[in-house]
Image 1: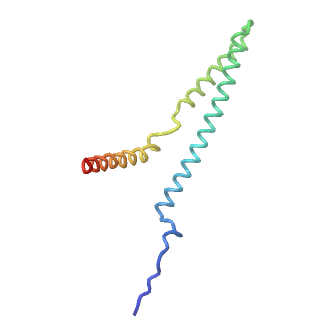
Image 2: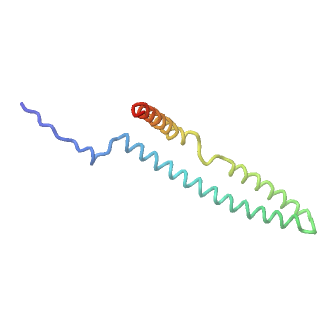
Image 3: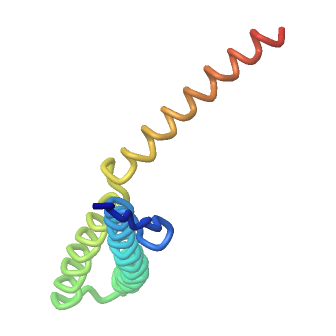
Amino acid sequence: MKQSKHPQNSENQPEPDLAQELEEVERSLISLKERYAQVESDRTLQAQWQQRHQELQHNKYQTPEIKAELRQIKQQLEVLEINLESQLFSWRSFKKPFWQAVRFGGMGVIIGWILKSCAG
């Protein structure tokens, strides 16, 4: 009996690894966009709180309510600073591209040396 082989068109069917990689990249991109939006929002909020803090500090009449609001604003600014100081990128997100750059960059240098030694 003759077995018929069905040719598999790899162009129409992405490899499972590639599909998983693309999904991971999409998730990372969505996460990065969300974090970027949060940072922008926090920066705007921080500027508003700082402006209000300065207005209250320059007020001639420091009532207990104003002092309490100044303390609350100071706490809010500290929280925002911590949020803004957190890393936008992590080492894990750079690990794979970093090692690929090292690998291919190193191969480029080695090939360059070989070609230079052959030509010179």
